[in-house]
Length: 445
Ligand SMILES: Cc1cc2nc3c(=O)[nH]c(=O)nc-3n(C[C@H](O)[C@H](O)[C@H](O)COP(=O)(O)OP(=O)(O)OC[C@H]3O[C@@H](n4cnc5c(N)ncnc54)[C@H](O)[C@@H]3O)c2cc1C
Image (cartoon, rainbow, N blue to C red; front, side, top):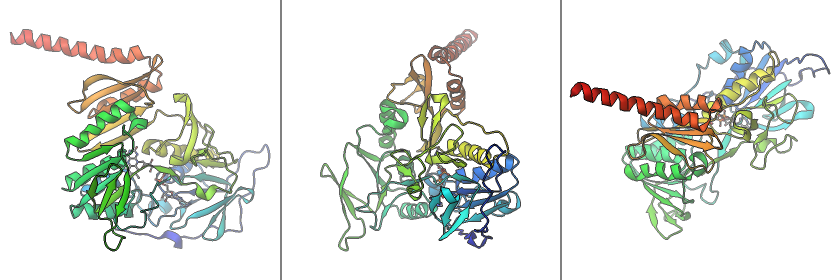
């Protein structure tokens, strides 16, 4: 494991706040500060530089690592990868992006009146700010300190989990969401005995709708993972010492031997540090933004998992926890905050992917409670395309092992394609296939 502490980087001068913008003058940003040194934060640095911004950039992160990628932590890293999945060469932050990194430095407060972020007991002043502090996993505090009870968000969490998988242990996962499912898949591959405990009757209902949630979850049984729905973990047995997990008892009385208990019950926006800043937050802690990703505070933008914004293309406001939107929002917020180029607005057809038991699951758009139609392939074969209809429009698509189809569906949703036109694409493909089969039969005959 490579750990780098870049706090030795020259600290910005705390006594030189950037000049405030005079009313009516073009914006003048001398120092852009970005809090959160991961995907959205790094893309904000890149976005500002690409827009032609030549001023100072300070990137502040509470982790000691340079920005790294999270999706591999529940996938490749649990199989065979050993290194931190860094996005960039460390030197490129200075050499190519001319940025100052303050790592291992949590921001503890935002003081908008002073245009300052409080870090390590001192004020880092900004002319423009991007908040990209992502999300933190929800925990079960009653068992959080016990040995063998983990969540997965950071590299160190993935190292702990892989250690348990290497030892081929009994793994119990609370929550049948995508990250829980990916870890179940990796654990089965390592030869572990795996149990998933899901409180609801229909896993993944919010992400892909109830019907597809149930269908996708059948993969667990197929690959040897026990999935119990509609039950919860009632208690955790910590053995003689009481502090090392040995088994869990479910609400239906079942007892599951457990060496590793993964709590995978979702994440909340990491915005606690903003509570007294006056910035507008949603009840779940998301940061309220406009279409340009500006927050309720002028000159303060947000990007990534923290953002709650009006997504015009889907006709609704939303907060996503997806890699693609964090990537795109970071670049746009950095550019908009830097104030060199014209401000752009952000809209997107949401997209995420997940890998379970060697199967690629991809989703675009929104699912709601819509019952989707399988328009190609079959659920039984783990290879299909399902479309979601709202009114006369196609608004969502789920594919399993059909990677070439998903971006076409994303395009159709963004073009507000009618439901009938979307179906016609598949009807035409079926007709062409039937014609080809008939022609083959004639030739063969
Ligand atoms: C294990 C895992 C697997 C995933 N797999 C997929 C996938 O397959 N497909 C997909 O679409 N998405 C996936 N995601 C989601 C995706 O990785 C996130 O949407 C993305 O990382 C969000 O980027 P972000 O920069 O907004 O937040 P984050 O990546 O969470 O980064 C925020 C950074 O800010 C730091 N920070 C927090 N508070 C402070 C503070 N007060 N001061 C300073 N720094 C702070 C955090 O420590 C972190 O380094 C996965 C996520 C995880 C955890």
